Every structure is written in C-alpha cells, then in structure tokens.
Image (tube, rainbow, N blue to C red; front, side, top):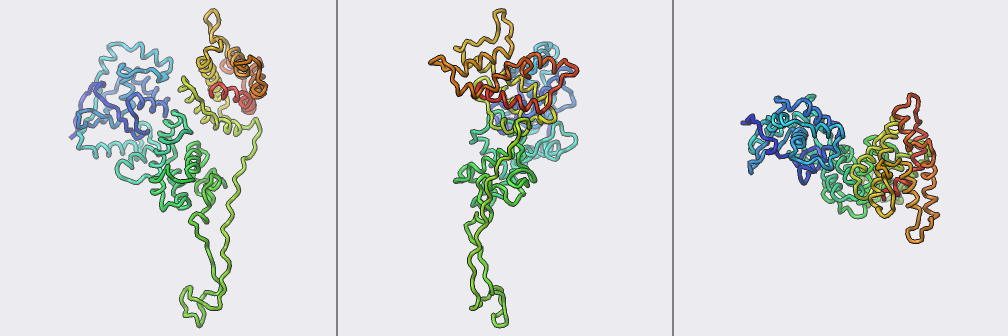
Length: 480
C-alpha cells in the first residue's frame, strides 16, 4: 500500500526516463530538456511556487527503487523547480528570466525552511503497475485534470513501456541518436513534441516499397536501410518541421495518404518497389470447352506484352516565391543552423523564429530577430578576439548594435593576410551592409524604441521579409 510522507527535496531523484522526452544522462540535462520543451510553463510554475510555496495537497507520486532511492514518477517539473529554488542544483546555463532570477536570489531562509520537504505518495518497487495506472489516468488518457497534457510522442513512450508496439517511435529515437542535421536544442524540442502518429503512418506506407515486410521490420533495420537512409531521414525531418501531415504536404499536397507519397524523396513508386511486373492474358476467361476454371488455359489465347510500370513522377520543382513572401523567409530559415560555442540560447531563439507565423505576428518576429543579431554579434566577437571589435566604448557603455555590426562586416570582407577587401564577400554581404547603414533599419535602436513606445509605428509583413532576406547572409556568416 502507498504511504503519504514528507520527503526532503534533496532525497528525491528526477525520473531520467520521463516520457515527455528522451532518456537523459543526469538531472541537469533532464531539467534543461523540460525548459526547452516548454519554458513558459516551467518558469510560470517556478514563479507560482516562489510566491505561494508548495501546496500541501499537491502530492508527488514517488516509487522506491531497490537502492532505496525515491524516484519521481509524477511531478518532475515541481521537483525540478524546488531543487533549483533550494540551490540543490545550479541555475547556470538555465537561462532563468532576469525577473525570476531576482526572486530566486531574494528567497528568505524561512521560505527555504518551509519547503525543504514536500508531500509525496510513496509506492514500493513492486507497485509499479499501480503507479502506471495513476500516470495514465492523469496524462495518457488526456484526463481534464492533467497539469500539462502529454503530446502524442509521450503517450507513445508510455505505451511502449507497457509492452505495446511503437515502430515509429523506435525509428524516431534512432534518428535522434544518429542524425547530424539537428541542433541539440532541436533534438530536445522534437523529443518532447513530435507528430509521431504521422511518422507511424508514413513508415507503414513506405515499408513495402523499401523492401520490408512491415513498418516493424523497417524500424528494426534503421539506420541500415541501404540506399534509402537519406530519403527516410528527410521524411522524418519534413514531418518534424510541419511540412508533411496526414493530408497535407509532400508531392501532391495530400500528405502521407497521397498515392505518390515519398517519390520526390527518392522512394520507389508502389508499382515498382517489389520488382514484379504485372501481366495480363487475353482470352483466358472460361468458355464452353475450357473446363470453366478461373484462369483455365486456352490454347488460342495470345499473351500480351507486359504492362510497363508507370513512370516515376519527376522531382517536384520548388515554387518560386517573391522576396516579400513569408514562405521565402521560412525556406531561408530552414537551412540556417547556428554553429560555434556560446550559442545555446541563440539556437533556441532561431528555432523560435522558425516556429513563429510571420504573417500573423510580424512584430514578435522583429523582436526575436533583433535578439538573435545581438547574441550573434557578441558570439562572433568572442570567437574573434584578435579582430579588435569592441562591445563597449571607452566609458564602459554598450555600443550600438549598428556600430558593432559595421565593424563585423569590415572584418568579414577583409582578407586577414593581405588586408585587402575580398570582392566576392563584399557582393555576398552588400545587402546586409546597405540595410545596416540605413538609419531607419529595423535593426536600429530608433526602430526598436519606436516598436516598443511609438503609438503609430508599425511594420508590415512584406517589409520584414525584404529586410530579412537582405540581412540573413550576415547572420549566417557570424554563425558559420
């Protein structure tokens, strides 16, 4: 029988195999994964617990291991927040919001004393099935009382853990382990929020065309899927980016349910995947003297030539879009992945840019883009200390972003050996250079102030698109 106990927070162990994400190596990594998946809820919960303390009725569900450790099975976010608030785990590299960090620093000894131990319902190691029932009731069955609902991938992990087959999840987990196309931030985000049901449907349809008997066999064979590894990887990525769904995207815009799904990625058409050639025979239908059997031979019948398989559709050509079209921005962003040290937060914000619907929230896009440029400029200066680009002036005040970017441009287009300008680089960055020199540029301090304080200063989606296409080459150059 479970027992209700107040357990010291320091004695609680986070569940490193939390269904919301992939297994983590330690508690720090587990907390960072939770923040990456949903920073708003995580920091909101922290603020609530700081302001009001831990509610006595909010029991954590804990299971005792063979080593007498208390592993949290329900309430990992609350346990994580309490560990950070009590200083049991460091907040370094957690990107704690400034206002919240101030509250953390000001926590009183009385608050810490009142919240050193928290109420837990403790189950023994032999009561794991009872714990699974409780977790399922709260999350996996989409109970209205759930705190933060499980995404489909978390439910799939739970199902796999209780013995159900989840070939799409197995393939996806292998993809995360082997892929070099995702940043660490992207991998963590997808691990907790990926349309796994779409991938399930995709591999079920693709398996026989790739020479496998079932999606289970395809998942077991991945990544050793011969020449089709790249095709499978691209499909996994396109599903994750939201470009392919059950009924949207891919060749004919019909998604994974379309008749030609996968062909533009290099997957063989359904009619040629098995290597057989369909044939027909005229005059083989039964007649008075044929014996009447279905397919009975008829000496007078003449076999026709094999019907050739349908030609594979030509690779889909990308529809050209104008420079002021949000689709152009989305395509350009898709190929941008920051590289280099000190870019963890930068990678997170770039992913946010990719997720923002520019046509609906252009001003939000502006603010995030401005932040991305600020962080990129600082990272570039730290990467190139010999460039002599100062982030602050002689009085120790922060220099304007426009001035820092101008110096960075000068450094980028100058040959370090000869000291001469490289024309090819000048041409590549000309658009960015003209935009930065513009006093009314969206990257200027004046424009940012007007966006915040001006009653009538607004920017159009089309204008943002045009500016973005001009400055993106500089953003890539600073983070390559």
